[in-house]
Each structure stands twice: as C-alpha cells, then as structure tokens.
Length: 81
Image (cartoon, rainbow, N blue to C red):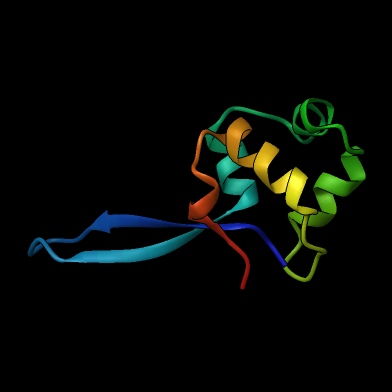
C-alpha cells in the first residue's frame, strides 16, 4: 500500500478539504528520483518502486522514519490505508 500524507487544501468559501498525497507525489515534490531515495535510505530502487505501487508492500518502521526525514514531513503525518 502506498505511503500517504494528509494534506489540507483550501476551497472557495474557506472550507478545508483533505486530500491524500502518495509517496510518489511527496518524492517528486522533494525533487528526488527513486534512485536518490533508495541511496539515501539504504534500499534498492526496485523497493522504492514497489512502495509507490497501490498494492505494494509497506516499508519497515526504520525505513518509514528515514522516509519522513528525507521528505521533510513528520512521521506522524504518514499513514498507510
């Protein structure tokens, strides 16, 4: 399952709307390639690719913490559905 982060976006009328960003979106927003993510957290490129798949595996807890630091988000903001 993909890693997801809840993001708040604003709609007209001032109401908050929540949407979910996938690991891929967070990685791209950070300006990183799959290869860069893999090298920085110590996994293979194919593992990062699998994490980005909708039905892919979940990262180990240690990798989740590294991903959060790398992507500049709080670990508590990352969730898996």
